[in-house]
Length: 614
Image (cartoon, rainbow, N blue to C red; front, side, top):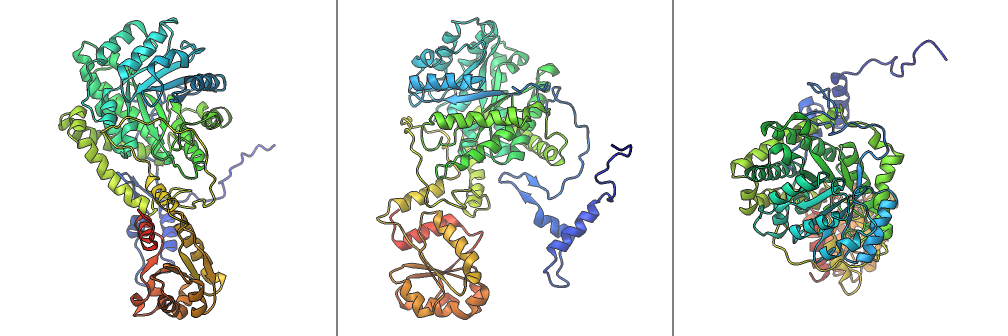
């Protein structure tokens, strides 16, 4: 013990922005010739990045101006409630959609007995039948565990079925959500939005089910289809406002309507943007409440965060455990009132007991062992998160204004404006996925060639729908694997590794992994003369040279020439052709394999050259 306080940084001068800039320039100018050095503005431009829908990410953040505010008070940026230290800091809401009612009832009861605190049931011809709701919920007390329903086919029947189930309990104490969301239904199916049933259900919930909300503003159809962060918030705001107008016309005040809406928001592996998305939505919705005359204390947005279906991969599904853990953490830090973690094998088929348990335990580990939920707004005050929150709130508000100016969310959805906005974002994302600027571990990067398939029950066939088209980010790479798997025999590309392992090792590993993305095998040779390499590559249609610039300068053209003379149709070089130093390089080397290339186009073209059917 000492009377002198311990100052961990006490002997160090406080660094300034200028100090940091000096170090940045040292790094970026290390190998640049004299007179060609970058200025700090040029350096910052290189370090700055932009998300797929226009959020600017700076390399360094400094303290933001303005008050931070407090949790639990308007505008609710920092959360709609104040944490008390209890372990159950958020509602652990698990999704059930398996049409086997006996299995689903067992899983519902298992979830609630082992840590889940509420249930979300999806009904429909490819999910739980509305007539089976009572059987599925046998043994569940909705005054203790909330129950929510959703449907992509008949929301009114689902709401009626749940309301009927509630009648067997104290209706003043039951909890849940009736799942009416006409615009999300229209987005999924392409049908014309029909808001007409919603007001009556809201009025009934207000009168008879005080613990139940009638409406959901579900943003996941737009996330599934590829909408960006800004547009998802704008769509949520525009949908919420459309419902406020519809309810007000039926005599239900905005203050009452605010208490009848739950926002369902997607969260993904971009944890900071996911955190900021939840915070920004609360801020923007509070502004809607202010303009609508809702009392300040009632302007909070109740949010259910769902781990993004679009980020789930079919191949190497175990990596999804990491993805959903990151997304769940982001939801908790972002202040979601309830969280749904999708099972890691969701893209393969119907989740089983094991995958459902893993999904549930991700939340329990975050809440009960990591203690994330005991802290009020853990990211609050982070200069990065506050900046992202500000950007998202302001840009989403501007996009919301554009939708309103064009006639509102109903018009925007039915006119194709929403699909057009999503299409623009998707076009930008496709390029990032194809070049692996947005990598997918286990799929577009570090694929597992000897993956053992996980056996699951297939999902029932879904009715054909003409709404927004859901598409997982990994689908284009999975299609490459499927194309190779359907071939007669495993497709092969031969790797001609020149020189010693210290020369070719790095590029061989890179190239092998790249072809592994499409399930293409890569037999290889190490060293040897041009004639020996050509003999070992006999029968190959495509060969890739792998080595260093120094070896390429002395061997690449000779080896490529020998390969061509031996009947190899296509010769690529791992790296850049200029490394050969030859002027006639294009005569024998047909292309390059390098980081940043369009992997999808290259692999499809390679499969074409090998002769694999599309």
